[in-house]
Length: 165
Length: 165
DNA sequence: CTATTGATGTTATAATATAACATTGAGATA
DNA sequence: TATCTCAATGTTATATTATAACATCAATAG
Ligand SMILES: [Zn+2]
Ligand SMILES: [Zn+2]
Ligand SMILES: [Zn+2]
Ligand SMILES: [Zn+2]
Image 1 (tube, chains in turn blue, orange, red, brown):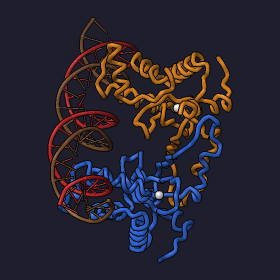
Image 2 (tube, helix red, strand yellow):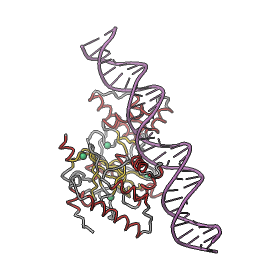
Image 3 (cartoon, chains in turn blue, yellow, purple, green):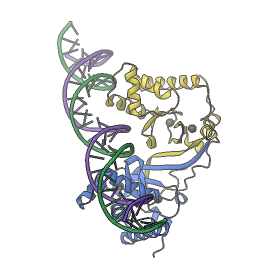
């Protein structure tokens, strides 16, 4: 299993990378996780996770349903939302609030408070682990509030798209 | 016009404050702003802003429409969304992504990247100015992405609600 | 077995948001 | 004055996102 080099990989996430390795690693991780926790990584769940993993592009629930339909599988809304709930609960998928879309986690395993960079042109998304992003939420928080979960999303433009404009 | 004491006020936002002053200041600010930019702060816009200012509680677009209906005003979806767009564009209202709801800005004027604390029990929201929150988004960002806008939301529980449970 | 359970399937509907076009009214212009 | 223009508001219809409620199925624990 290939070792990750977080800083490099993360800091140029919008550039090309060895996606076969990326894809394979993620599949391996979720299989391992489900086996360990005695959870069922069913064909449906696998399929949806594959869609999301395919090119790091966030997909809306209804886009996922379209893909399922194309693949001849059941495709009513609850199907997608349930699978997504499962994948999110287990930490392998995140919701991008600003897009009403879902994306495969890029740093699975390590329990984290992710931050996302979202290109407004190509809508690709890169996930930063909190350690790398340097985001220090929860440090200087008022005394009358207890943080349980954070959502951090940055809209902007990636260099590829910037170059094209 | 009353001077604000940001640190104190912000760090105990979930506690009581002099809301008459708070309300009045905000109204003053938006009137001043619209006058300066030659924008129309119409009765409709004023009314919606008042709803949002009333108790710092985020309101969904359809809640606002209900309030407008109660007040005998037009209440079809575009009415609310257009007014909200205007108020957001001018920086006096923010959308809370995690709630699909809208809230009056607590630090109007100062162009900012706000961060929100959202109580999952009472759903009240407190807004932190970036200076106060200590959030340093955009500092350690990858070289292949240019940040234009940030969304930071913290879910958790406020001390009032914590005390009740 | 058969009872329970987790997963999937199905139908209907709720909740959120926008597109497209019509009307109004307050200045600007002629 | 007449009418032009433009921003704001009003209206109808529809798109998009998400959930409730209940039915079926298959693996397995008792
Ligand atoms: Zn992640
Ligand atoms: Zn891009
Ligand atoms: Zn604000
Ligand atoms: Zn609370």
